[in-house]
Each structure stands twice: as C-alpha cells, then as structure tokens.
Length: 376
Ligand SMILES: [Fe+2]
Image 1 (cartoon, protein in one colour):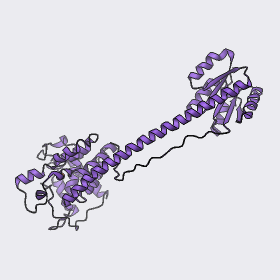
Image 2 (cartoon, rainbow, N blue to C red):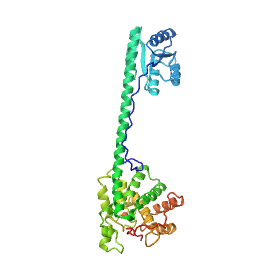
Image 3 (cartoon, helix red, strand yellow):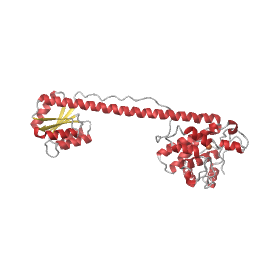
Image 4 (cartoon, protein in one colour):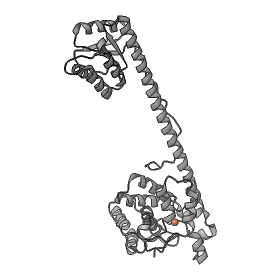
C-alpha cells in the first residue's frame, strides 16, 4: 500500500495530455570546421524553412545548445577538440530529444554506421547532393517527431494508469471507512475514538521514527482497529452493568473478527492488520487473542495499545468525566512492563510534551457504552 494518509473522497477525473506539436520552423545546428561547407548547408536548410545556427567545433556546438536547444544537429565527424562521435554522445546524454545526423567521408562509412547504433538518426556521406541533404534531414525530423509523440503517449498512459490506481485505492479506502461508520452507528462509544487513536498512534510512531509505509498502515489500522465489534451482539456492546465472563469473552473476540473481515482486503497492509488483531495483547503475555508477549507483539500493535488506552481513560462517560491527561499518563507509566511497552509509553510522553496532537477534552461526556479496554 502506498505510503500516504488516506483520503476518503474518490477522484476519477483523468488528465488528458496533448501530443507535442510540430514546429513549422525547426531549429537546426550545423557543426563543421570548414566554413564554406557550413555556409552551403545553411543555405540549403534555410531554403527548406529551418532556422539555422552554426558552429566550427563540437565544443562551440555544446555552448550554443546550452543557450538554445535544437531540433536537429547536422555534424561533421573530423573536427578539432571534440569530434562528431563525442558530440553525438554528449547530445544523447544532455539533449535526448535532439535528432543528430552525421556527415562523413566515404571512407568513414563504417564509423557512421556505428554512430547509428549510438543514437544518430542518420548519416550523409560527402560529397553530398542537395536533394540528399533535404531528404535525410526531413526523414530525421519525421522520425524525431514520431519518437516524441510515442514518448508523450507513453507518459500519458503511465499517468492514466497511476490515476486509475489512485482512484481505485481511494474507493477501496472509502468502502473501509463505510465499515467504520457502520460501527459508529452500532457502538456510539467509537464515535471519534478511532480518529483520536489514529492521531495518538501516529504521534508515537513519529517519535519512534517508523518508516512512511508503516506510518500509513498504522493510521489505517488505528482507524479500523475496533471494526470487529460489528460482530459483537449489541446487547453486550451496550450493556450498562458488569459483563458476565461469557459476555466479556464475546466482546474480546472483536480483534479476531476484525482481522477476519479485513484480511482479504488488506493483504498488502500487514502492519494495519497487525493493529487490528493485536491491539489487546499485553506486554506480559496476558492479553488477547494470541497471548503474545514483549517483542512478539508487532510494534504497531504495541503503539495502538497505548493510544487506545489513553483515549479510553480520557474519554468522559455520562456517569463520570474523563480522566485528567496527567492521571492517564501516570496510569500508562504504572502499567509499563505489564500491559504496555516502555518505549511506546516514553514516546507518547515525549509527543504529549511536544503538543504533537490536540489534547482530549475530559468535560465531553460520550455515550454510555462500555469501553472494552480496562487498564490493569
Ligand atoms: Fe479494541
């Protein structure tokens, strides 16, 4: 899954990219150390509608290209300082959209063919005819145009595939959010709870330097961690009095129920699934559902356990106000080594000190529904 927070607004709009337009007066750079030859070539190409510049060496040609890119470079092979082969290599590296046509003597045809293998579009042998120059240059520009169009189409296609993938991911996450919304209707206690747990968990994870992939999955897992309560009987979920042992066991099935619901959907998000399944594990091994202890509990779940408990303690109920932040923090620290991981609690304390998240308002009384977590 991509390393980014989830957005719940599906977006299916696709951007249409235009193909590159043909330049009616393409710029051509003529490179030859013989001035008369440059003048002849310049005249031929200007008659054909080109805008021409010329250079007496490869070094001069590079300097001109740095000022203005050219659609086509027509270059001699034998030149001082930088020969045609080296100029070709430089152009391929720095201006890959520029077409290069080599001008060589008959004795250098082998070399010219080699240049084709290194990215030259074509070659012309001296002495050349006017119509030959026009034909080769025209073909080279035609081929360059096709390559540019091909490149634009490929980029367009890649962008569309990425947009489609993003749109599907957003739709997928929106459907998961619908599940979470359904739970909030059934169990009003979870109203805002999952969101706050996500905020606290992310603050802890940032203190612990978790990577972006884990951060994104931790946020997702936190938002969905109690989704399994959908499978818990409402009479039990909303019971005012103490739970019987059977009812408690039933409520505590929610991590596994949630994990079963989400496993087929979150195959690519194992860290999010770990939060859902293991957020009620305890560091001393006395938690549920698997009785994992210490480092056996995935770090994301150890983080979520701290965040979940803090929110449970600081959330008000109709019959009592929420616990003060300092008292809840003291309770977390008291349970280090039994219920909570020491590093996660310390990271939470640092995030609290740094005001990394909005503090809960303990005066707000939430609906009279049982919080499953009970701090030992
Ligand atoms: Fe839970």
